Image (cartoon, rainbow, N blue to C red):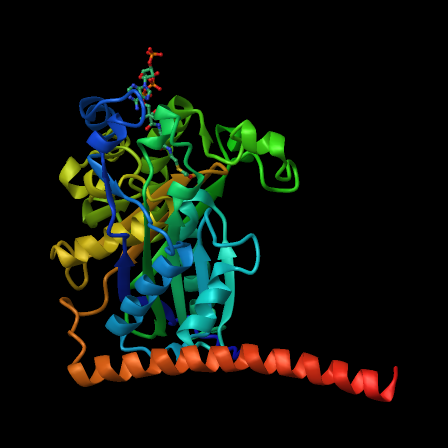
Length: 384
Ligand code: ACO
């Protein structure tokens, strides 16, 4: 870890990628599972369908796909990564961190890696931490991922929550540079007094898994929807205004807001609170529902794909979530768009590299076993 203090250093988003499962679950499908209708879901939330992982897919597999795409756009060798943060409330395991699984699979030998839990605000929290570490000169290259498989903690018999959530992942590569723009400012906030409004009651140290916690469905999301709704409608415009003020910019200068995708009515309330037309707030809720920490980076990728972001545009990401938490980031887009498509030679090289990384990981696991066996053998032969 090197320390190059320089007040001009900025964190620039140089790569981006997303991944969603193939399986689509429509409102019609849900109407066959619980007492609901397509009309109710669309009118109350704006959601039409969501993606759900299949067998063998996990938060890690989605994160890996999104991360590889982001690294390809950035033309960055994973070996150059100094830091990997995965924001998620649905990591593959309590430990090891999903970020460490990613570090191994990508082949990023010098990267520090950790998971971050800040609900749906997780991506903004991770972006802010990474941008500050880059700006301070601690690191040069970081990968920030928001990835979720909420379907694995959704109670599919509870109509008040199961219609809302979906699975997916989004990732960005951040690189330090002297050019103007990049992540200009961020604000993060929390209010733990609202923790029980959005909670996964069991599975932690407060309520370890027991037969009783399983039968009483304590391992699924519990939510006080209306209270979360009121909090979100208030905090989204507030956080956005705060971050713009910190960046020395105004609401009118923002080309596009990338809000957390929870409910169209929350986006409408945020637009009213900011005094901007709804079109200035990007929405893809209809296709993915609420993918928690993945929703902002997925929305960012789709906004770029749809040509809604241009070089030098000011964009404002803003989110809220379990905790309760909230966060916002003001970013001046600083790389040319559209991104250059990787050449075929590059794609082949990447493919080879990923295979080599897999082999290296297998070899390290095998070596660890051999080493343990050999130590045991010598210990038995030579005595303690
Ligand atoms: N289909 C049909 N009826 C339903 C459904 C459904 N899926 N869900 C609830 N209802 C019923 C309720 O039972 C209630 O019936 P009643 O009047 O007979 O009692 C009626 O619809 C109204 O229910 P409300 O809860 O008042 O509905 P509301 O308009 O508040 O919408 C919703 C509910 C969509 C959950 C909304 O409150 C919301 O979006 N809240 C915010 C959720 C959110 O943003 N969560 C963030 C999660 S972030 C994270 O960190 C994971």
